[in-house]
Image (cartoon, rainbow, N blue to C red; front, top):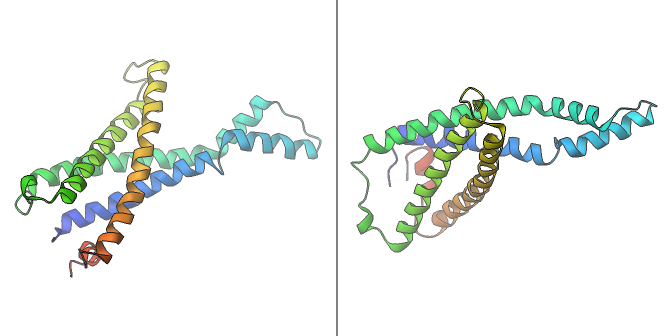
Length: 189
């Protein structure tokens, strides 16, 4: 399959943005966890004879990771743009698209998975924007928190999809679709 230059650009920008977003979440859950770091801050400061409350340590730990969340939001805006651009590409580049009914069962499954992925990306961008602008939209903190929980749940699908996508491309390259990777990079098979 030949990919248009505009699709290739979208694909690689999307990959960079999604990996960046996944990276910020990984940092949040590991090295920049406010729970772990607040305990570390209390412990290290007490070694120097400085006592602070748990709330103060949490405040410091959250301040340390705040720039990472700024990057998460910036990458979220980039993802929103890329989702809109992908929708545009979908409706303007239909000429080389195989009909769904002509696809093998495997290809139909892959196609359905991509539609689920695009739907998840659309949800992630919309829910992310709603979380950032929940006060401007007049939404309660409780509703924003519920949206955040769903946003984090759907993140798991995105994470698994990325692993499945990379694995699937490697398997396809090794088996029946030789040149799929080089085609996505340079257009050569």
